[in-house]
Length: 275
Figure 1 (cartoon, rainbow, N blue to C red):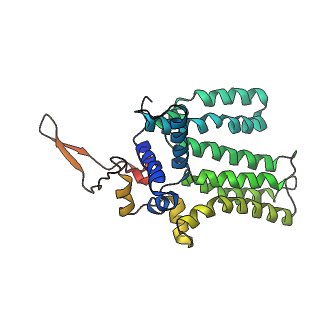
Figure 2 (spheres, rainbow, N blue to C red):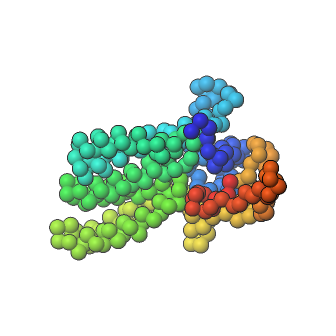
């Protein structure tokens, strides 16, 4: 992609609000996951320090913020494949991962999916290492896995689906004698996993005052109300437009109506298809 995706404009607007209004005020007003805009803010600061102010600084900031985690994501992909198929297959799989067009686009389009992908793969790698006979159920791997999963959830809410999968998977392993571990050891390991997850997520929930189960779930899932929607439609750093609930209609050359219907929800995990 030559230019960032449309969704990246919103990430840039939120990152500018972080600098203008502060972290706490921005996250209480916006419902999106917070990690990627903060990375964009850091990327923008880095560009200003190294290069100075440039006309395309915003577009470059979101692309750098998306490209760096995408480049790093090949490391857990390689380590996961190394456990499964060996060194040569892991090297080939890592190269294939780097060359996949759909993966490469995530960096150029400036989307949060690359950040989510990196931390999600890191969490999976830690879980595989925990179950490895070499490490013999070392709790430290679940601590690292919980922290990685928490960071992935702060980039994309779908990462939370790993939590029930981990509990179910470890429970099923208890039915196999070869993989069985003492129940106390399993309880402590799951406690460590939950603790690491909470250490990452709780500061965000406390900052946004989402302390009840319902509000915490809506906040982590990235739910938006109408007021939040208006804040996400950013025309400039200091000017916002109010979204309309009606479809835009124009005229085609043959006189028929031109319609731009609501974007299909399956196309975007953020904001149910709205920009």
